[in-house]
Image (spheres, rainbow, N blue to C red):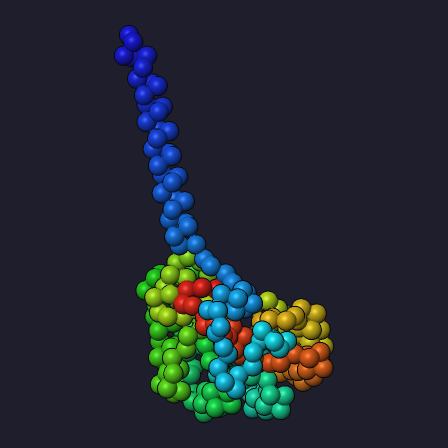
Length: 258
């Protein structure tokens, strides 16, 4: 009888032990794979003591910097947009989709030649959190290789479509040598063609070390660029690429910056 009475207690203790062990393992896995998100300022602070910004490059520790970023296929950055960026000396970062890159090699070359940075925005604009590991790798690798075939350099930055990422995407990005770049300001230009509204949204959210997201595809976006560039210039901002924003630190593969 005593043995029978003890058995439920033993089973309860065993069950509690198993639950505790599973919990510990789950916590360890989460901690090992958790996404690291850093602001540009935090990454600069992590740079080695005495690290210096490359010669001729803006030091965003001393200068009020902001990064304009443009998402889409390379047919969308129009000559007008590129001319405006050149006029305002606005170095920017273009996150390009891969599937149409070879249709516009001259545009891709001009982006690089004008001193802008080119990042990876996947091959088909797939939502990476919804696809397999194999497809994530394929989406990023194909685009990186296409960019490299035209510019001679593979991208070290990527932007997940819709900003959708998780530990799995972070892990694969790290394996491929790419950091992830989100944003601090979006004009939501995919919702409206109202140029004044797009400009207002950007300016309302702009701040030092900000990363602005725009899409040249949408009709109201490029017409909004002159007012955005003019206003931010008057506010004392220096336009830089994402990598310049992080300098003297370098973006670390797998990490998320915003």
